[in-house]
Length: 468
Image (cartoon, rainbow, N blue to C red; front, side, top):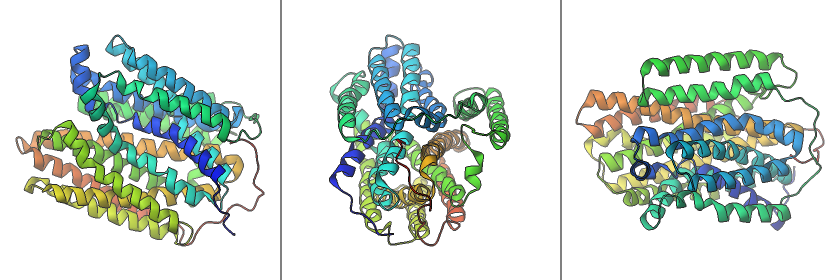
C-alpha cells in the first residue's frame, strides 16, 4: 500500500478535532489542584469537593459507549458539534454554580458531552485519513491524551494564581467556540448518518450504569464505607457480566463483546487499559507525593511534571516517522520498557530522590507512553472496516478512560492502606504504591507480545464515504 502524503486539508481537520479531545481530557484533571480552593469557597470538606472530579469521570464513562451508535445514527460531525455545544453550556453553568451540589450536577452534564468528543473525533479523523495515513496522523493527535494529565494541574495552578476558581471552566469557552466555527468549515460533513439499528436500551441500562457503579465503588473504598464500596463493586461486576451475555446474543449491541476476540483488537485493548492506568495513576500519585511528602507548592509541582509532556512530544515525533516502517509490536514493547524504566525510581521514594532523577524518569515515561498509544490505535483503525469505525473508536476510548479511572481508584485504595501501615513514613507508602504501577508494565508486556510483528493492512473491502 503506497502511503499518500498528508495534505494541509487533513492537518486542518485533525487540528480542529483535537480541540474537542483537548477540552474533554484537560477537564478530567484541571480541577485536581483546585480542590482546596473549592473546599474553602463552598465551605465543604475535601471528600465532598472531590466529587467535582469523580462525577465528571463517571459521566464520561457513562457516555462513551453510546458514541458509536449516535455517530452511526446521526452522523459523526453532527454528534461532535452537538457535544461541543453542550460541553460549552455545561462549562458556563459550572462557572456560575452557586452551590457545590449544583457544580457537581453541571460537571455530570459536562462529562456526558466530554465523553463523546474523543471517540467521535477519532472516528471522523480515521475516515478522513484512510488506512495509509492514519498512523502518521494519530501519532500527532494521540499526544493530547498524554499531555492532559500534565497540563491539567499546571493550568489549574496557573489560573488559580491569577484568577478566581470559575476561570477553571471559563477557559473552555473560547476554545470551544473556535472549534465549532472551524469544524463547520474544515471537518468534512460526509453523507448524513441514519443507520437503521435500534438503540440498545437493555445494553445501555447494563453497560453504562455498570461501569459507573464499578468506578464509584472503587473510588468509595478510599472515601467512605468499605461495605458500601464492596457492594457497589459487586453490583458493577454483575451488571457488566450481564451485559456481556446480552451483547453476545443481541443483533446490534451497544458495544459488541466479539470485538475483543478478533485479533489484534483484544491485546490492543489490554495495552490501552494498562496505558491509561499507568499514565493517570502516576499523575495521581506523584503530585500528591510532591505536595504532601516533599512539601512543594502547586505551581512547583506542576512545573516538575512538565518533563513527562516533553517526553511525550518527543516520542510522538519519533512515532510519526517510524509507525509505517517498524512493526507495532516493536514500538509498543519498547514503549512499555521505557515506561517501566521511568517508573522504577519511584519505588525508591523512601530513600529520597533528587529532582533530576524525577525529571529523567518522567521524560522516559512520557517518551515510552507515546510509543504505545499511537501504534495500538493505528493497528485497530487500519484493520476495522469503515462502517465499524465509530463503534471501534468508542470501545478504544472507553477502555483508555476505564484504565485511567479504575487505575487511579485502585491506586488510591493501595496508597490509603500503605499510609495506614507505614505511619509517619509517607515516602515509603508512596513507594509501595508505585510498585503496583510497575507491576502494570509487567502485565502489559505479556499482552504486547501478542501484537502483530508486521504492520496490519487495511481491510480488503472498499472504504465507504459515509460520515463516521
